[in-house]
Length: 148
Image (cartoon, rainbow, N blue to C red; front, side, top):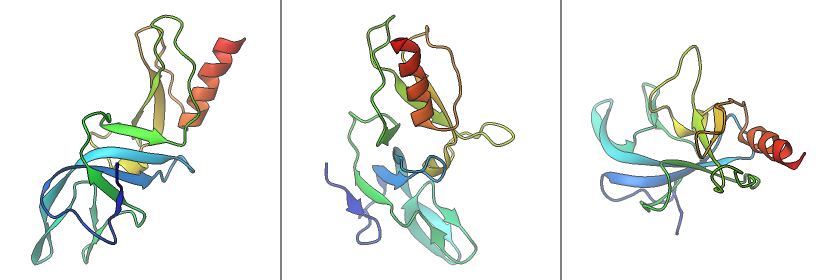
């Protein structure tokens, strides 16, 4: 997969793309999210921009390290890079994955991918829905429970 720096070249047309950016909450973790690149109002102009952008009244803001790639169906809607490996689940024999959401006095639907701040391990129904503040902590906790 070829990642393109958004600051150097933007997608040419509206559509769904994969977006890669650093997490603002889990330092050192990279978030990859599937999101729309859509036409939006920006003052007097309409511009193409990712759906997780922010309008500050003067310009459309996106993370400065933002990268994009053509959509790839093999990726989940949200995934993470730079995570340790989680041990295989003893119940379903699959490797759990990290699921994330944004919590701030309530759960938001479709928050910006770079502000996801709560993390859970998921695979089968046997893993309890324990929430962590960092995905590495979730994986380390899981691995330690299975090793001893």
